[in-house]
Length: 236
Image (cartoon, rainbow, N blue to C red; front, side, top):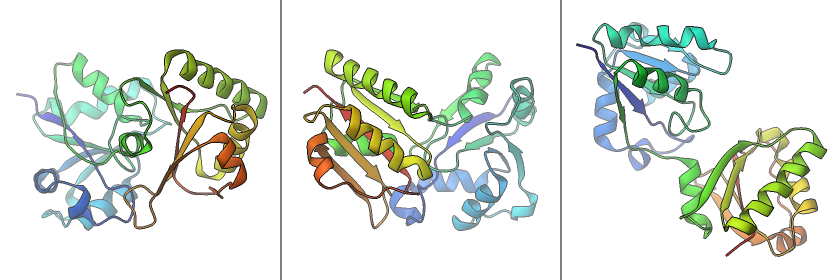
């Protein structure tokens, strides 16, 4: 019999683990000996933080990140095929959302392996429900283009889609480019379009604020190197 592939949530930073991760999820995570992770050092720190009952050096890690070759991903499931339960962990939050973990999950389904998602924090959904934006029709579009003209064109398209379809548009950026993205948003978007800026979600200095573009222009925050999520809504 094959093992199960568990999608393991982790905290979003320096959170109190018991406040953001359910006890049953922690108990299951502590029992696993095999993990597929983005970065071994980050994974080891998290497992040490939750006080796993195993010796960290005895846990087996496989790496899945943006540099992984598609032809090599299937081999990451070898332990599951051999009968071991394996956990997939992102750097933060839930695996599979803006995360390479989705690739191994797809292959697991193709191989008939049972995939089990576990409950935990997601900055995407936490920001959305706190934004006051439309939660019945929304799209997470990931990263926007880096080049200014292409980025501005993409923003214009997202704003138009939001206006025509009444759809909330969620996107992210590398923390060191947040301010450039915000400048483009303030330059391109209509003054009545609403923008939610959310960063450090679930931390003590959590910031989730929704204002019109016109209002953000009057008081523009410094978002440099903050883990940030943006939500745009030009409709109701």
